[in-house]
Amino acid sequence: MSQTGSVNGAKPGFKRQWEKRKGMYVKYRYVYLLVMPGLLYFLLFKIAPMWGLLIAFKDFSPFRGIWGSPWVGFHYFEQFFTSAYFYIMLRNTLVISLMNLVFYFPAPILLALLINEIRSNTFKRLNQTIIYMPHFLSWVVITGITFFMLSSDVGLVNKFIVHAGGEPAAFLSNPKLFWWVLLAQNTWKEVGWGTILFLAAITQIDPSQYEAATMDGATRMQKLLYITIPSILPTIIVLFILRLGQVMDVGFEQVLLMSNPFVRDVAEVFDTYSYNQGINQGNFSVAVTVGIFKSFAGLVMVVLSNRFVKKMGHTGIY
Image (cartoon, rainbow, N blue to C red; front, side, top):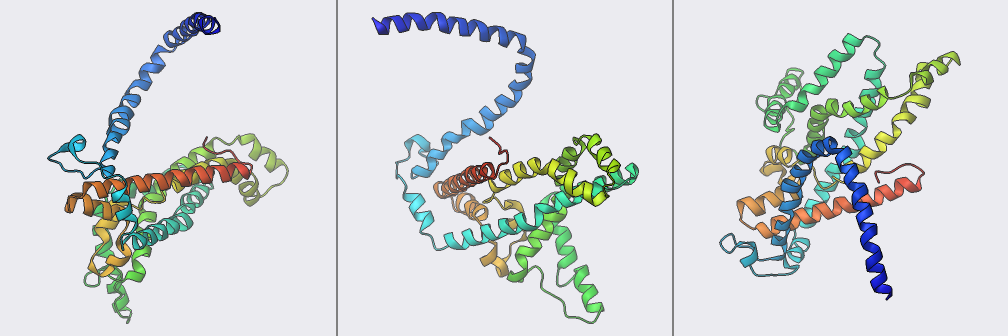
């Protein structure tokens, strides 16, 4: 009796909810139409391809297909984690990511604060345009410029050093300098583009706060420390958490183009290993295994950092 009553009672409730939602769908139909292209994009190109993750758990053969290949469980995960290259790749990836977090991540914030202090709008827009431009260059072009600047034979920097009486430095083949060259490239290319969000956050600050601070006799530095930075702190935290989610992504194209036999030990990262295993050697299962590991590590970093940020009293990303 109770089950029958609940079922009979659920239908009118469901009907009422559907009528209510139907009215909402009709009311906001144009908004849903705007969402549809983005939703289809994620369904077709992000969600649907995830069934291919099964390759990591199968002895995949292109001739048999995913469903025809035999299951192997966690064999490729065990092979990946026990590989002699795993700890080398983990060290290289974490060091490059840590250097980007420490040196590159604060750079757009500082640059946005400096640009915001420029009083001439013309000069400000000119600076923004100039620093945005490297973002639109491909890594092939960036690598060519780096070779032209740092090469031992034709590099302008080494020509200047020799002209000054010094010895040419092997910037591109010295393992001790490889990570710093990557950092310099990444910072030069993306620092301008990274300022967009912080400049947008600064423009959302209520001007009355600055006016009140001016009335109280605050200096520009005090306005910067006590108004601007606290106001953009939520944006900084959100972007920092998202950045931690990409801790295993260090730029496949950049590392691949900059690597050479002299720096192989410090240039091998998970991205290049996955490329070599999947494309060059045809070990698709291993390549997908690496991708799953990277995604899982990024998810763990986002969850832990978001929880830590909330415990510190700030608003996380969810």
